[in-house]
Image 1 (cartoon, rainbow, N blue to C red):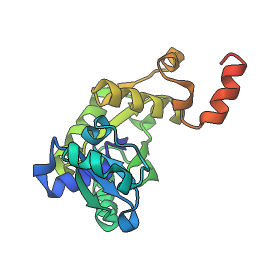
Image 2: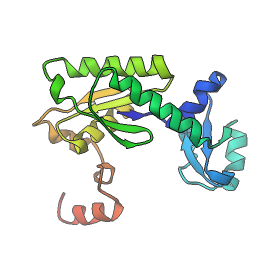
Image 3: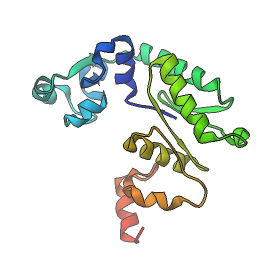
Image 4: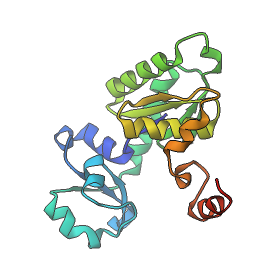
Length: 190
């Protein structure tokens, strides 16, 4: 489960008028862009870009710029995790905006339906939108999550034997594969 545009989503929870507007959150000392709403991404603002280089685009696209508030983001992260724990008793916190859910004890249920319910409840209880990828491995779960975000469905399951889903993404977009490894893998025909 991965929170969508987490820092920007946190800002929107406490300032609902930002919904639908491009929002960026800047790093400590407001140096670089560390988070972007989808609208800001669509406006061509890149992750890690120095804020001073983006001023014209901020103005042109009426981007709302916020200083980072890590105390708020940590609190919201805890709220999201607590909400998920209402449904799934075992989670592994991977980062401030991402957790792995152990769904194995719940296999007797329709896990995709359960995860859709989790998404709805997390949004209702915290205001934070999340996407969930369901798969037999963490790598495939992260891939399913990525595809769920891109498709707009917010939830996607990849079952064992359905690894052909990998063909839908660039090799460097697979968790753990960076640009340099992608070049080497392409050379050997992967």
